[in-house]
Length: 86
Image 1 (tube, rainbow, N blue to C red):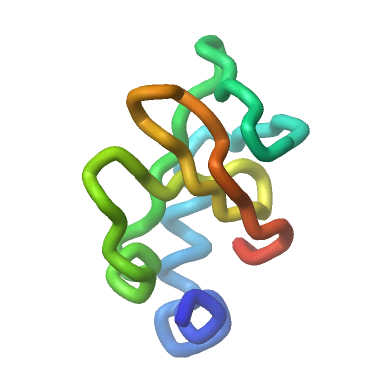
Image 2 (image 1 turned 90 degrees about the vertical axis):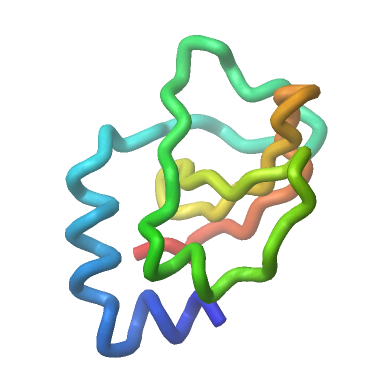
């Protein structure tokens, strides 16, 4: 899944796309409100297409090297996978 994209043939494009975005640094905790003053970094399409489709109320975001699952309406960190993103 995501590991294939971050370490496979598309890894260079994924890393380049992530480097172009403003890096987000935040200590993550499940059920924590995502701070209003911290930018929301999107996933590159190459990575996003390899992840499961989410219901409309959830979205994937990148924080540092973590993949974050965020509840859009509640603005909550639902879950995260540390060190998944190069």
